[in-house]
Length: 350
Image 1 (cartoon, rainbow, N blue to C red):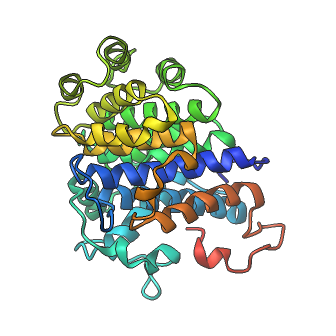
Image 2 (cartoon, rainbow, N blue to C red):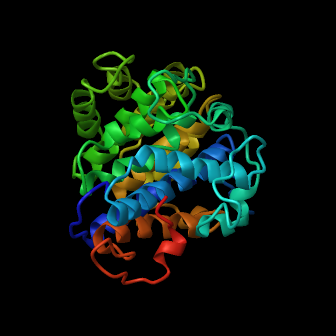
């Protein structure tokens, strides 16, 4: 079992929905390069798709822990990514059972089977079929998918310790140490936001809390972004300098800069467009969407955009189900009956 149960307030539910839907909206706006069309569907990319499977894996890991007592959550999330790859028709992916696989309700969502950009490091790692936990297997990719898909891990702050460590472990199943460091920092920023801290406080605290976790990034890796937002906010040149490439570390630095440059609730849409406008801004937009969505809640997201999101309903259900799993334990446990007889079919514990 990942975490213990507690009570979640309506405010926390709005925060979780804001974080997940903000991530997905940022991903979709990022794909437009900052020129969101006036009409038509806003589609998720592979980053948004993988983030959905991260949440699915987190829920399944807790279900497994409740019923089996023993669970390695990053392995369960990694298994979730293999289901995404199988739905995509990617060759070389191990079938985990002969029938009814991929399983769970996400396997029934057609849009998650659509190719929407590549995720080469993730795909290569899934095709390699490593033995997870094998210390001899080390990935090297520094790419931003290792960051964006792990952002929902920050939400486990309400139910358990060290979301940054968990995010790093999940990122490390396919990416190298630098990307894992960025994942740890980002999840810890989110965990501090949901604890009631503003973006700057959450960022500064995350840098301190992650000093024992990071392996490659320096002691204060986000300080240049914080200082740039204070001195030259909302400058495309400053954002491009912080985010000069497609690395996870660059996307995180850019997201911190944008979130601090557009701190107000009514600026959320402008923040996403600005983030997406620079050459490597796609993952910046997804990350800042998660940050600002968590900070301001789901009602701060622009309705005109959310209503056009291809995966809006999917993301909202996942956010709600994440909260429900840790509050109510609908599948029951080794010692108690299920309150929802269909929960195990939706989230099989493996």
